[in-house]
Each structure stands twice: as structure tokens, then as C-alpha cells.
Image (cartoon, rainbow, N blue to C red; front, side, top):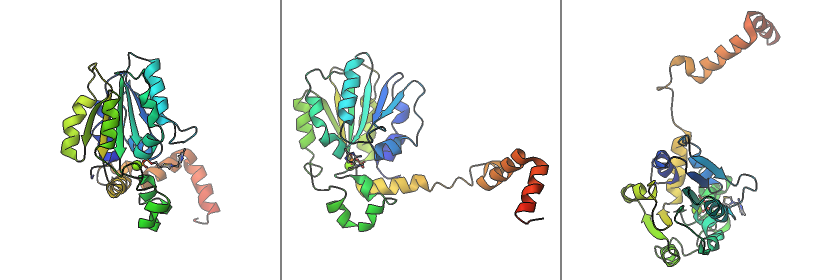
Length: 239
Ligand SMILES: Cc1ncc(C[n+]2csc(CCOP(=O)(O)OP(=O)(O)O)c2C)c(N)n1
Ligand SMILES: [Mg+2]
């Protein structure tokens, strides 16, 4: 997989410390991290009620203030972050908060291969994906904001840089400051990664009995029994 939210999830989810919490931004981050298994004692949260990108950072901050002894991780897209960034200027922000900002410079959701808006090509940037706002993936904008608010800032633009930072980002140790980890990806890599996941060919991996067609046949046979099967065959004219 290319360097993307999906690759990041795959290489991070198993590192989340026991008893921590993970908050996921709508929509792409939630979908992507859902492909992977959370460690058993880690709880996962997302604003699936309102399905909004407008309150994810505040909700994460509020949760971290309510349980000071617990680590709170957030994975937030750039539009979602900039929507709600004022929250982390709160004077009570504490060292149990660790935010990962996936900055792909737009609402990558609308550029993903399966999204109808992606068919508009470059026009989707202007009219659907809100590209061009928020400093256009500036390498300094969020760094300055976060550092001036007392956060430890880390950043990555490729797999090597990411792996060099993720160990500290997920350490169970109590650190002195909250962390903001800004990761730069591209919408094309986001789309290619999702395509790769959605098109995994499992036919070589699964035993024959588990392959979809055989599994379906076996299940129908078990549920209907021999009498049921012959009735169904009569109905569909196969007998
Ligand atoms: C309040 C609100 N406005 C608009 C939307 C529609 N929406 C869904 S995903 C999305 C793009 C989010 O972009 P970003 O946070 O950068 O995440 P990415 O898709 O790039 O991973 C938008 C605008 C929404 N869910 N909630
Ligand atoms: Mg984005």
C-alpha cells in the first residue's frame, strides 16, 4: 500500500497502548481504521451520530479532560482539524492527548476512486473537495500553532519518517506534553490504498470450504435440508 491513512492504520493500530482510547474523524479515517482490529482493551469512538467533521477535536479534548489518567488518541483529517482547531487552545489541555492529523490538503473523501465526485477529476478539487484552503499543506502552519500552544510537534511525509516517529507517538509512558503528529499524504495515494484494500484477492488464502460460492451453497443446504432443497428446486424449475 502507498503511504496513506490505510497504511498508517495498519502500522499503528496494534501499537496503541492498553486501556487507551481512539477517536476517529468522519469519514475516511473512520472507514479506513475500521479495516483493522483494535487491541482488546482499546476503545474506539467516532461521531457516527451526527456524522459531522465539525466537532471531532472538541469531543476528543473533552474526553481527555474527563479521564486524566488515560491516553486519548485522535486521527483527524485536515478539514476536520481546521474546522475545530480552536479546541486545542483550551488552557486545560493535558499530556494525555495525542492527535494525529492526516493532512492530504483537501477532503480526500471526494477524490477516492469509489466516490461519485471523483469523476469530475481536477474540478472536484475546486467544487467538492475544498482543496486550496488552510495553507495548502504548509509545513509550518500547524507546527507553529501546536508548538505555541505547548504541544510536542512531530511530522512525517513518507513511511520511513512515519515509522521513526510512531514509536514515541504511541508510547505508554507519561510524557510531559500533549503531541500533535502531522502526517502529509496525497489524495491519489489515499485512493490507491483504498482500492488495494477493497480488491484483496483472498481466493488463494482461504481453504476451498470458505470460498464464497462453496460457503453459500453449504449454508443453504444446511438451512433447508434435503426436503427444502427439493422444494426450492421444483419452484425454480430445476427438477
Ligand atoms: C459538518 C460537516 N460538513 C460536511 C461534511 C461532509 N464531509 C464528509 S467527509 C468530508 C471531508 C473531510 O475531509 P478531511 O477531514 O480532510 O478528511 P479526508 O476525507 O481528507 O480523510 C466532508 C466535508 C460532514 N460530514 N460534516
Ligand atoms: Mg483531508
